[in-house]
Amino acid sequence: MPLRIYSTESGKVETFQPRTPGKVTMYICGPTVYDLIHIGHARSYVVFDVLRRWLEFSGYDVVHVQNFTDLEDSITKKAKGLGGPVSEVTERYTREYFLDAEHLNLKKATHYPNVSENIGRMIEVVEGLLDSDLAYERDGNVYLRTGSDDFGSLSHVDLSTTLVDDIQPDDRRENPFDFIIWRRAKKGEPSWSSPWSDGQPGWHTSCFVMSTNHLEEPFDIHGGGLDLIYPHHESVMLISKAHSKKRHCNYYVHNSFVTLGKEKMSKSKGNFVTVRELSEEYGGEAIRLYLLKHHYRTLLDYDEGEIREASEEIQEMGRRLERLRSHTYGSGSETDLSEKIDQERSRFEEAMNDDLDTPKALPILFGLIEWSDSELENLSKDDVVGILDAASQFSEVLGLFQTPVSD
Image (cartoon, rainbow, N blue to C red; front, side):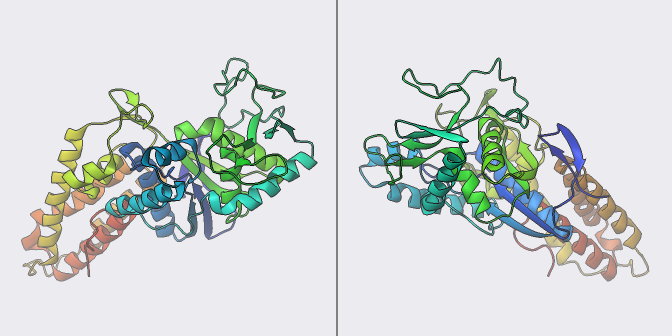
């Protein structure tokens, strides 16, 4: 059974077919580095880490790109508040991200581009769009025209009823949905010299360049949270069509939100819980298990009690695994559990191939561990080796039990 994954663009679960046999290319939108990540961010990083692990388990060579946004209003504001340079903020919170990523047992991406190191190519892209008359300049700001019938095809928004929340009273864009691909810098902001103004690339320009610097279009997977579908991924898709004359990627995959009190977690609103505080209290694996117990496309309302339970479950499963690993083999020398283990492998693979159904895959791993622990005295050496091998593979895919479960 091949992997089937939900495509935001088609609105259906589709059979995944990579562009190049045996290889998968994926770009995941990463953090804006001005503060610690919260559990809403963590959900996205864990989901796509599991997707990558499953693809690798399935035999694919995966090129995984995750960006850092190190140029944004919130970063400038933070730097001003601290009385230091922007770089001090971005470097600090990039380090903090990697510490949280280690707690969450996230695999290192193949590439970690950031905005500030790619300004030159972003200017080149804007120049190309202007030369093609697909963009226009107004008072140092450059806008991309969105008159294409394809604009809205990813998010399926009804543009006739959609509000544009970034229109200013003195706005001079031709169409309310035209978006900035280069903007004049405000006083005190980091800026770079360009033919139009001392300014900064637009958010959508940045992600287009950072992804295509490392991945050939159309790459296979573009991932992130639901809030990135519109306008961000929709706009990046349009830049690609205008600049490259290609599809940007073949599968847009998005995870649902983590809410707090039924409201989406958001730093700007102050309703969030950081990964750091939760990992210090319960451990990073408990956070990971909590997130994976819920399908990535379902809305998840934060429940600290569930994380506490996940922590206890991780500890209990760890103790059971340790008993299995240190077991002196019992009387079951003639038993053969290979058929049972093969059935569990098939069930696990079926769950993971069914749109990453981790809530169904987790009980298969934990059930195997619990059953083996209850049958210790009846297991032969070959039984234990086979069970540990399967548990190790399942655990590696799910990113649980950071200490190897088999030697």
